[in-house]
Figure 1: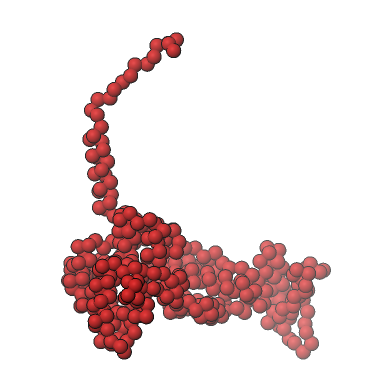
Figure 2: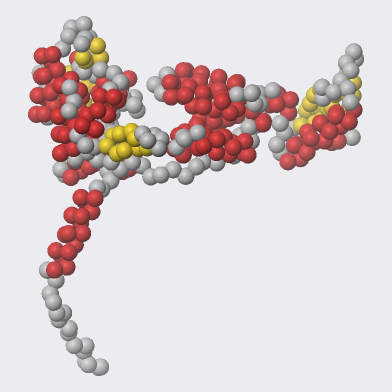
Length: 370
């Protein structure tokens, strides 16, 4: 019967083949076995998939994780995403668990197993979710290319809320005191602009108009590929003049040291935070503790957003200064600190104290009175 499929052997072939109809076309597939029972089992499997509307088929069964990963990285390269290195890191994490798998074998139970294994390795839920998002993107690209008919359900872990750290002025000064002069200027720029660290480090002298008193960020340097203009305030002007006097013509970058651009400064930052007393002790083992900074350079970005709003700057203008493209992300950064909450409750108490001790009660009008 047409709807039941059939078994057959090809000329000069020992293996049994199955044939079935899908979307009006006959599909032929080798069972890879000389045993007729194996072929019958494959045919029943395919007919069941067709009945459920989830036919896998021989083409999909040959798609491997490595092919998914290759397409994923290629997509980043074609779109010239600056986070290509980040994407390759996600692939490396996933490859350790799925590297030998076919795409059809990466089902929800195996994905849950991966998440559990990563947590046991010490990865945070947020890190695991970034890996799972990359895996989901791999499947989506395969579906778009017609290599897969669907993607598995990928459960996400519950993450802690976004970091709400600020850098108060006293903390900024304390860290600055323990930084070398070249790094002090980087900190100053971040504290008065709210720009991302990557945008600051890639800034070149051709982006600085000292006569007009502005810095123009090129679109290719911005995370969202949108250029913007930063008028120089007095602190920023003083910082730019210091950099101008210390510049080397052999290096085009504003923030340079020994004729080279300032790069990874995590160790320098950590030492300054520890020296300023802004750290917490983390146990490495029973006898050893490690001092971890409690302040991040990215805290400056949240601080600038908060300071702009406190200063009465319209939100749209503030977003233009810091480079926030969407309101949702800006709102996530425009959060209140404990000092803001204390001020709010203090104002509430002052308002209550100003209320009269006794209330004036007006008599109700008599019935029938007009």
